[in-house]
Image 1 (cartoon, rainbow, N blue to C red):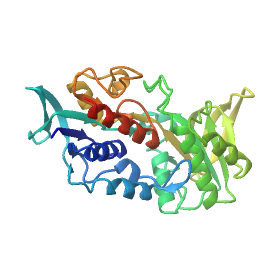
Image 2 (cartoon, helix red, strand yellow):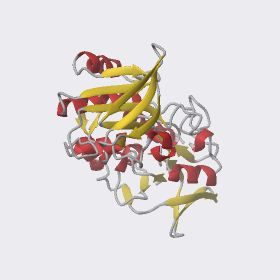
Image 3 (cartoon, rainbow, N blue to C red):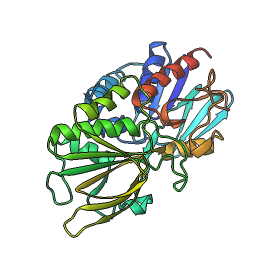
Length: 334
């Protein structure tokens, strides 16, 4: 019976494990955290249907109840070596694990918005990230720096994506729709607040996303401004003053807001970067490079090592799960 080691217990790793186990592969699923699905459990609701993230996490977790799947939590794999037609995986405690095939699903991390000092994250309490907003929505408590419900909320797109200064020229794909989703959720909690989204250009990639964007304007009165915020500073009363430009009309803008939400883009996780470098499969921006963009998109340059999900490029949860199914069937066909 063939053995597959999957590194990373996010949605891609779990879905691939489920498919492989159904085809009688023995699966070892390694997760560096204390529990799987951390990048789902830190969210409140999912687009495009606004379903609770916890519901999806429960459904995915149920897939692990299979005799062919063994989960290793708190187990960080830092290197993989091929030896005698098998792979040896080394964890941080220098223990070795053996497998016939390896699937890397180590995922992403959010761009550290503190690297954009001009936007004030980590400096001014009224500046938060999209992940911070998810936590507020989970607890149904949206507050400004004074602990009060904000009267005005500004979302800023493309923080750490499509940005030469941060070194990430790529689009993170999900930030636009996440901002629209969060803005609608904020409107439901704060029906009288002014809500703005600053964008470079909106990229509503998925089915139903364009409709959500139109609904945000027509039903929820979310206001969209095409432009970039160049600077943020605090006022004496705890608000955030922002300087920007409306690029549609070519005019500079100043606005004071109670809360500014930075839509942080995706970067490869530390696990992705470590394995990409150590296995010699690193691509641009330290994501894992695949063998080809079409028929070999789940293969790497190392025969027997495969990749799925946002370890190779920014993806939505739905795309990551679909990609994991493709990766599993690629392994089955070996």
